[in-house]
Image (cartoon, rainbow, N blue to C red; front, side, top):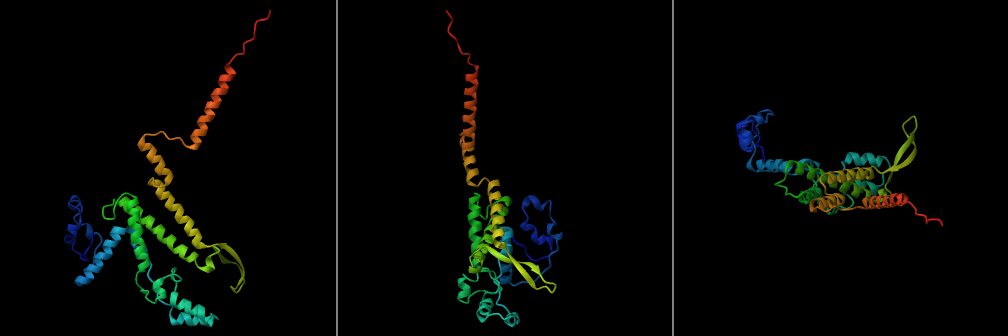
Length: 268
């Protein structure tokens, strides 16, 4: 569904389902939309922008903007802090991009600064389509529950992708980071301590959230097995059930043995 920038609610009635148009005829009047004169090409860009957020859900807003190179003022302040020229040259090119050390566009000096990152955009599209099909649907025919779930799973994948790119750098390969432990009265650090890298913590949290979502939708290997057994009508016996059944049989055997009365031969 795409929205034209018009304040007249009648202009939007065609975007409302027939079953709802009679109930909510003034829906768009509740949030006034300013009228903006756009050229046909500008309107097409806006419609694609809105449609992308409707189809992909919240994850469409998480695409990183390719960071521009550091300004001369920032480089000058870094140089005044005795920064090496090699480090300054690297910072000037990479900015704060998490993919800076591996991005082919940055190495070829073709990175679209201040524009959506094409690497993340492509990754989001591919992961969203795959998750949609894993949920048994297609991007244009999903229920809203499936859409928001595929969007959440894609977002977790994207954050995982960023974190792994950062942890793949040599200075982060030990998966630890230095944190200031003590500071002097003037604010200068006195002691440091090693802590778990923040991106590793993000990985663990995201993966736990993904497992929970997949478990709720019965898409983990464990839940798929249980679902298949249930649908096929098989009873299915796991290890714990098998051990419990064996313990019950042994208990019944012992009870049967204790109830038997020994017979003694008659005395002469």
